[in-house]
Length: 114
Image (cartoon, rainbow, N blue to C red):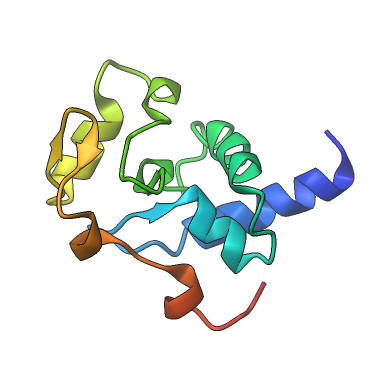
């Protein structure tokens, strides 16, 4: 992996660690916050590699429509959904219900530390 990608991935993980319990954000919102608005897919790649990192709540990062597009990167059939439901988030057909209620936008919630 290129050093600049490692640095970007590290920044993605640092933002993901700040997502509050019971809230979710999107790949695009993290990318935009990091000043790389067109890099949502790269945020997804970073999150794919976060599965073994216990301090990174990768289950709280979904696509812009609230779909659990990264669920296949979690052990078990419905682990991502179960983790979200344990935080009070309702998921039906792999999609978060009431996304607006649960959405956390790092661009609005955080000072620009990264």
